[in-house]
Image (cartoon, rainbow, N blue to C red; front, side, top):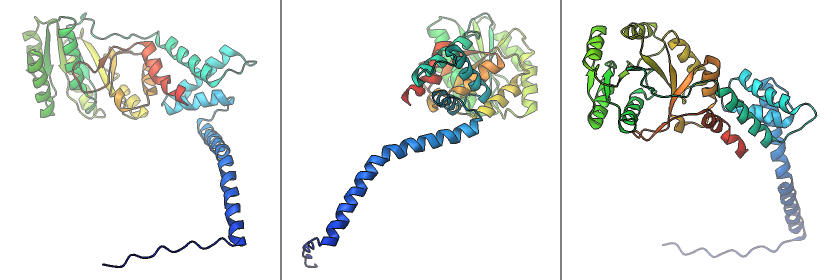
Length: 321
């Protein structure tokens, strides 16, 4: 065992050492005073950089609001239209605060969303198809809708699944069917689908889980079109995940657009802080919203949306800036 090392005495400060110590103290004090200024300059520099990307040059608070919309993944032209609507409201001679601008944008978003439908199952259609690419949470969403329909609306519900490309999806829906005590039919062909619909015709609503595949496959969309032709009076919900890139969401919608889409369902809103993609789809495609989902729990994590709710989600984080 080594002997403990003695603590060396501190060397006395010489005149030169004292001078260095005083200078270091002054530097530290100056840095403390300059730090907030540097932080502000950094923020301004970042804003200018973002502004050059956004290709806009609004007054500072308007520009900050515009950049916020872009960070929310709102389409650039759509964001521009919101800012200019608020600027027109206040006129050139007024300079509202950032908080007022954000509140006005939220009101403008709500106003524009009033033109679309926010409605889930209406029971005007016995058949309801759920379509969408793989991985968006389609099967779990169907279970949530079925649970609310049966437990809250007191409707008789049945399942049909054509998602036989993924065995796990069939088993998952069978498990939900057992828990909810609803019948389920697994179909492989158009004839199977027709027979299943006939067999379950006594039920109030039949929820159909379509195959989840790569949405870029044209053959997949053609197959869905053929299946829908079995009953042209059916409703159809397109399920989209908000964790997807904004352009991918647009591409997905464009690919499914040949189908008779009634409304969209946005899933996984609990897994992101960017909600502007909803606006891009709703306002640019003029389509309504049936449901939002925010978790895996059945049936709790199913939200009935409204214009006010979507606007609050999109603009809520802006008040933290």
